[in-house]
Image 1 (tube, rainbow, N blue to C red):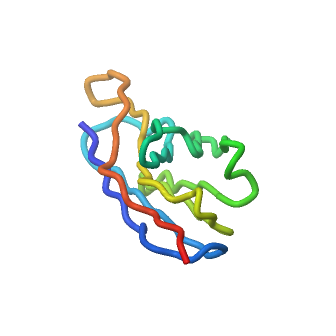
Image 2: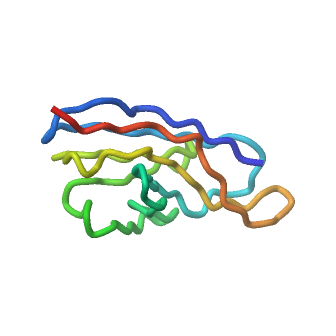
Image 3: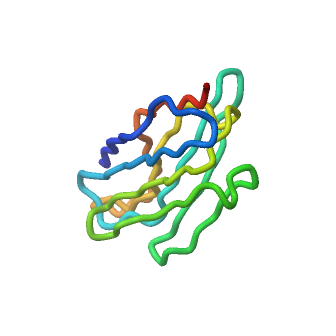
Length: 120
């Protein structure tokens, strides 16, 4: 099993910045892919960014050039630096990982979510 603990959400004015962090713990062989998703009220949960162990990254079009995902493989941690925030970035942000467990099964695990509100 993998447990994820997120931190860093909050209220910020348009144009401001926030940094989200997520740390994984538990019994696993490897964390293969680390993700950030978000879900706004009335919307489906959608992928914001992802990063492989190699460092290869993916960004959804709405956040390209404003958000940066990074990971620390030694600490099994992932971060999302969010700059130039817009009101439409308001959502609950979820950390997720694709991990290989000690039982050698591949599963996806989710954090509890952290609220990000962009408003003046």
